[in-house]
Amino acid sequence: MASSSGLHAARARGGNARQLVHELLRARIVGLELPPGAPLSENELAAELGVSRTPVRESLILLAEEGLVDVYPQLGTFVSRIRERDIASAQFVREALESAALRDSVERTDERDLLELRALLAAQADAERRADPETFFRLDEEFHARLMAAGGHPEAWSFVQHAKAHLDRARRLSLPLEHQLALLIRQHTDVVDAVERRDAAGADAALRGHLRQVFADVETVRTQHPELFADEDAPPRPRRGQRKRPTAG
Image (cartoon, rainbow, N blue to C red; front, side, top):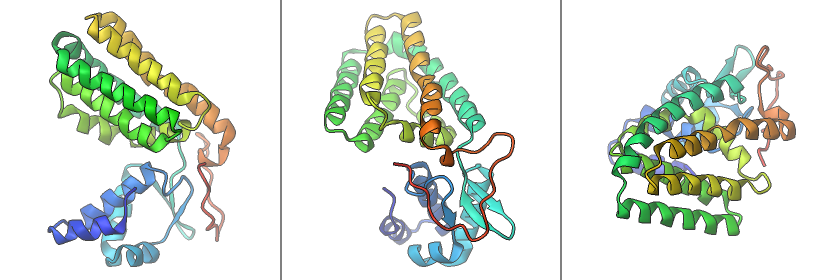
């Protein structure tokens, strides 16, 4: 979880205040520490992070451009609620990049790659047994990054990460669903099994099916937590004076 101590440490190393505040707030939003609908106060954030209001204000502008923050004149600034069209756009980019890299992974993956992928699957299973979705999420990220690296495209993972902020909020909300972690592990295993067999078509089908799982998950999560999602036609405006932060759990 991102913290102000990390910001102070980064500043001590000469980091740019606006960039660091932006990265910290973005991580908090994507990680649901600041859940959809949460109010954001420039004064409170500046005091908490030990910076002036200027880098906070500039960071909120950048987050608004990314669609992670909504600004309502006379009402305030809020973490944006999740929009299904944003999830669909992020999913499109992610699937395009990961599927393209997977073709090379099928051809290039060696025994070491397979051992590391299997080790990640074992660690995910351990996180599932311990009911630890936060660790599972980190291991899930490592798995997909490692799969791209096996195809010779480690740098491409950073583009996937940047594109999928909206998607990651929905993914995190879906992890507590019943049997969800076990399902994702089976899907990961299907991908690795196909890669090991050099079955390009099978690997591609398994990966695409896995990545598209989020659409079904969103429908379930939205039923359970409608307050965290925006109406696609008319995003809900917060009421004047609304300060209570919704819970994602």
